[in-house]
Length: 278
Image 1 (cartoon, one colour):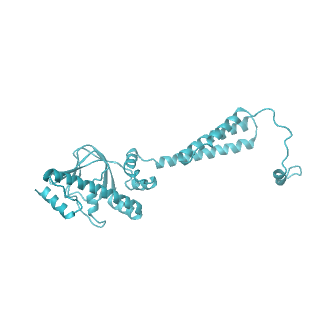
Image 2 (tube, one colour):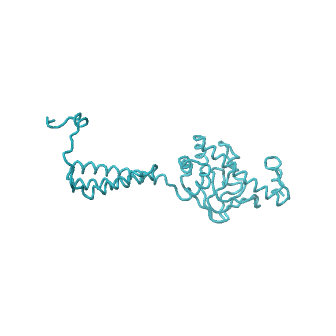
Image 3 (cartoon, helix red, strand yellow):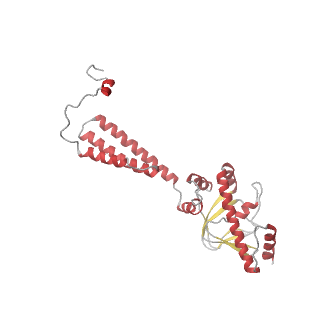
């Protein structure tokens, strides 16, 4: 370092005084860049706030680079601002990738709003649930069977997204399954993880239906791993089964003119036998 160059101590503690301010102002590119950068730093938090910030910082630093190249004629100004532009572009690409990765299909978004958002389930937890069913929506044509009594094995758990399913036993109608209800919650709850069984009812689509399904073994592994998701499924399944029981209770009332307390399993079991056996 030459003797004429000031040291760091002198530059910080005894900065040189400005002899005179510039009479002319910097070019339009410099002022435009300053305005864009100012607006960029007004962005909020979160992924969309970050998109706003870096989306404005990138053109702001680009204008600074143009100013350093065309007006200031400073190679260091050009290089540093070009690096800042590149950094902002890379950050924007990363944010766009995260946004696309975290986006779920429309059917799953509607499902989240209908069943999980009222319970304030975090999106990260919901993605684990969706991932377990491989983000696939199954379809069922009109008059097509989802399960056949005594034949179809209980090896999955499914949730209806659209359409209507008719449940019957020995050719006799039991009740309907509507959107955002489980197709096979009683069958799922009736078996332990190590047990196997077949459906005791027939499920037939009355209209074109769509549903999602979780493979039994894969869902059991998820429920073992995450207690919160296990409690979530337990509450949803319990509510779903109670809705089906109340629906059957209404059917019994229509036939016998009596309402039974579904909290008494033996009484309810006998009433079902008398209803569907007669």
